[in-house]
Length: 226
Image (tube, rainbow, N blue to C red):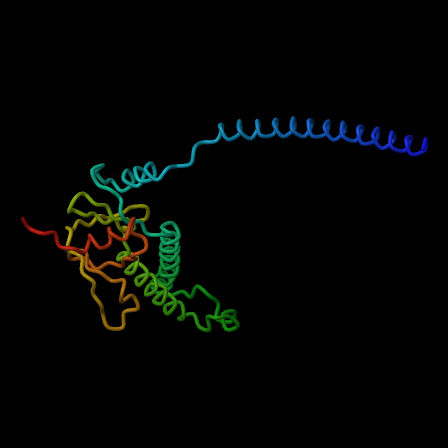
């Protein structure tokens, strides 16, 4: 009987000690966690707030030089990637075209034929074909980009579309009215189903990048006359 009482007393003492240790560890953990969250909260306060959609829209309006009375209803994706690809293509075509022009005017081959026979260029005159090819690719790329509106703004029944300009870092504007948008198709065009006439300008529109589906429907609906 005494052995049983000693065992019970020992278990109670051990359990009590473990409970106090667990409570002490939890208190320390809570203190560390509080300090950590306090630092995180301070750190978040030092960082600038994320740009809201309204603030972003104002930035686009200032960049595109659009009056504040217009509202953004369409924004195309991957604007920076399209701009970089167009600029890199133009730079490459300019370098190769300039090299071909220099070789033609000076009548001096830029590449040694004994070296070029082991590479892609087999003859010194092949640079002309490369120049024509890159110029053709760059022309097609610029033609497609010029039909791809970056943003469309609306002010009641008036619309304003913004496109990449032929000059780097600049944009061009095109005005049209509600109901002036019609879907068109061309033979052998890979963009049939996304090609529209915005007034007198052929453009490529992606329906999913309108602000709401109703904006896409409204832009193609002719307003009722009183």
